[in-house]
Length: 113
Length: 111
Image (cartoon, rainbow over all chains, first blue to last red; front, side):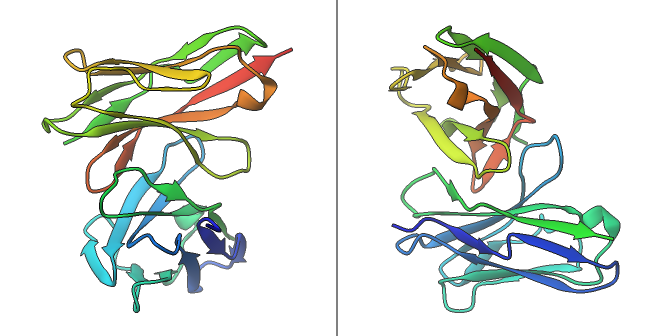
């Protein structure tokens, strides 16, 4: 069990650029979640997948945000036309469909300049 | 809608002492889970303890225990024999299809 991994750990980008983050879940976990965490706040749910199906995406912050999990393994979160307000920590978590507890990765810290 | 409230932005405890972090929540579900997660500075979120709502017995994990009051929708975390490594942000979370988190409590442990 290698845990949830996320890449890159840090990303600095200029406003208007597109960014993509990757998450590799724990291998036997079929559910994968994306959260955003801003300073001084708890994580805020964005979207989740069960296998390759995206079961909830209405909480994505805008249509500039999209996520994929094409083969039911790793997932990517893309932000198009980044804005300064997108600066935050983006967390990925995974779980089995039989358990409610989620295991988190180290996060990707995005800074938009 | 589900909500989770942590009313203590910061708490402080001396090493070897006991501290209790508070959490209240609201949900219309009858079956749910509650969690406490720990987030050390610049490190990842770690699951500390979980409680199933249908269980009356309070969960314990070594020095960590909860006081779950279902009728009052209260879920506090007690840390006994506090250690310097316990210093972190602690988040209370409520299960839905995703986790709903409180704003967190920053725990400082002093020698």
